[in-house]
Length: 483
Ligand code: SF4
Ligand code: SF4
Image 1 (cartoon, helix red, strand yellow):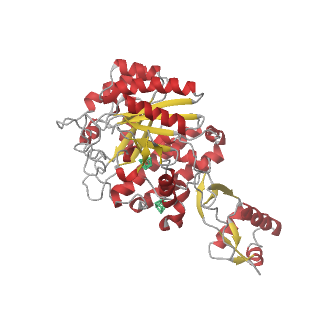
Image 2: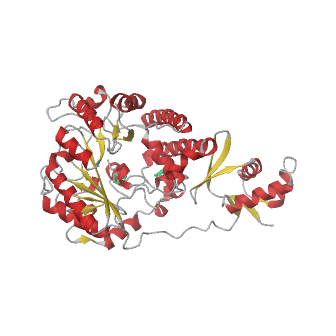
Image 3: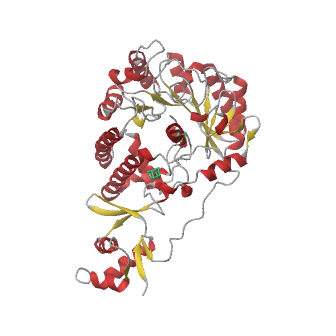
């Protein structure tokens, strides 16, 4: 007689209910009593159908168990033993996959000298200081980049500006926005703009320009003075908080056409996440705050070690449950990490690659080289082409094929792979010298965090499903994590 077994899944409880996260399909499924009992039984190994019915006979009617089996089979939470789960063919993008986000590195120069910076610090990939790379993008290259984006994008395109410190090249930023707007209108396409800045160079006319042009702004900032000034210092070693804080307040007061977010780099010495969040959200007034651990080779003093990841997860969990409480009352909270993951869960995203880099997102260096993403801009080893000559599709597809999650042995057995898919290429390159290496030093943290977000998602699904409707249909932008 044939036997059934549980397929790959992850169990969790939320809002007083039991759920499973079905890994191959990235779907979340709420369990009723009989289906929970079936999965409990199958946790001990495969069983014949008769044996399941017999074991559960005292607790449920046969028709209830039968219905549970049909339903679990329908969502592919269980299946016959010996019949492998029908694995989807390895999906690769079509050769003419449109580019949706282009990140222009307007300069590789910066007026700050943050110790942990991946562009200038100890772990840099590209030698921007002594190498042959142009320090600033000129207007001609910026226009060629716009033409490249217009040609390669679909109906809508997102242009985001990055550095170094982006605002050190404000004249080119301003003229490129005007040019891109005109060209997009001529080609009947929609275009949208954003930038990342350390905020030190903000002044009234720049703020006015950003507000008028509805440019999305992300400020790289690490929290209150004692945290910001640990690493985010000027070249003379002086902390930047006193310069940055009033400028950001001015920006928030005047630029109300788009919500403005803060992006915090966490290190082993600045791990008081609650305090940072309160300061940036409540005292400074950012609309949302997102956190990312510093990208660094192991052994640096500021690298987050295993204990640090545990502490980080504990604090992330605390803030995430606070987010849930707000969401239950339809209130905005502002912890963007939880929002982004919940959105991915709601959309049932199952990633073939960790992020949009090389897929719908590409970075352009100051001299017009097109690479994987902004963090690799200017690196010969991660170059796909140039804005002038276009992208070598064979190189691009070769990269995507090699980095597909299906080919990562460790990830293949991991239940969090629909959300993670192996982790940031830049993190992997910095840590292991190989973009294709899974970020294994992070895995417990990623699984712990995904579990937390599933709990929040499940509870909202039970108690306030209307809240989740904001994530229906709307496309998630790759630019949301450009940092
Ligand atoms: S990198 Fe780690 S957490 Fe991410 S999918 Fe691979 S094994 Fe899972
Ligand atoms: S996650 Fe990493 S590889 Fe992907 S776009 Fe961001 S920095 Fe680049």
